[in-house]
Image (tube, rainbow, N blue to C red; front, side, top):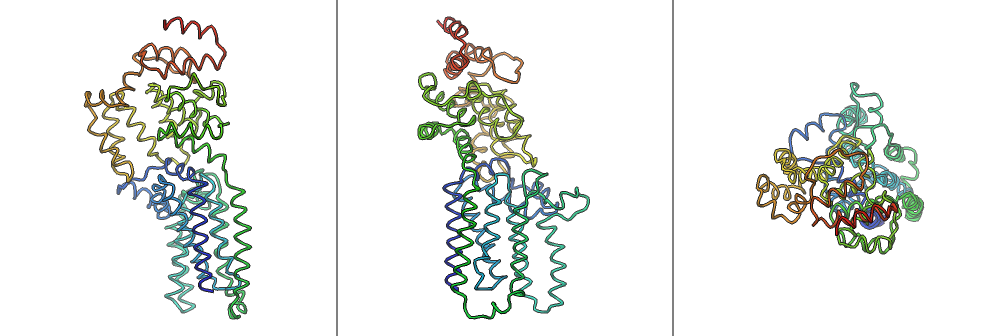
Length: 463
């Protein structure tokens, strides 16, 4: 039976690894870009001083590795496999071995939601580890009960809220278990409750514990649980959101060729996908010749109005940035970061804000963002390479990206409304006629709105 346990646990880990690595990688990227983990004592203390701070800190630390999807998938696979093993060590009922996988599957379901945070998984795991320590080191019933009482008090501070000065709803929903502070993460609590229920099985099923090996029963419960809950996981996975996140990720990393390959394989039918597709076409100088070979959504698929959330403005901000609308891009990114619902900062946003301030010559502000990024694991190298550019006008002018965008930027101030107008694009183009991207966007704007008169007037001005 021991070999069956090991094989089944390995199968669970491999299934989770493949799921998040192949089917759900961009959900992991999404998680990473909406936090900024700093190797800084003040940052760490601000987290751990709150109830549940240790679980929150561990969750944030692991989430920074989600920048690389396969590493993030391996972390999740390891954590959920460890939880399954610890639950099994609490149960020790061979005939119901498959039930030890229930908490891990519930947590897997929980992590399908892009707003579910890894701190909840760590909270369950740390609680199980403490339970194992008590079970192994203390044999006296009285001492065990006393140890559990003490452990619960400590655990609530380490991995779950118990402090009364906090809002009463925070005591139940937890601190940073979920990105929306007002949402109750019921799947996480269901997983936690299932652990306690399963830990009582040895007391309830004493005859089964002492019965001969239940190999067939154990394998049967394993197959029932994995097939049943595995199908539930797959049916509840949001692959449409995954596709949207993929386009956003590719735009962030300026993978223009990959974007077009993806769009050629399956035409995007959502606003973010169309916005990124058109941006890629423009970056490759193909927008005017090929835009109508792809799905379009009017001007909403070209430069959509900026929404007040943390996700949808980012592809539009990327288009603003590449066009040379640096101030607009900066404002859009800043507002997107401030819209993150759990009030975290974003490594992605910090990097872009450093770039826009560098291009605009606001070197003190750019330094502030770069100094923060120096305290990160994966943005540190970029920050160190960018710092020497501050104040170095010749180096910026020669830089293939910053020099070009500084030349393309608006030369005169103007009031920016809630949406881009052809006059804004026209002014952008005539301030630098080498800005071919602005030309493409303006002509595309006229074509998508059917404004023949405006298009003819513009073409006559360019002759």
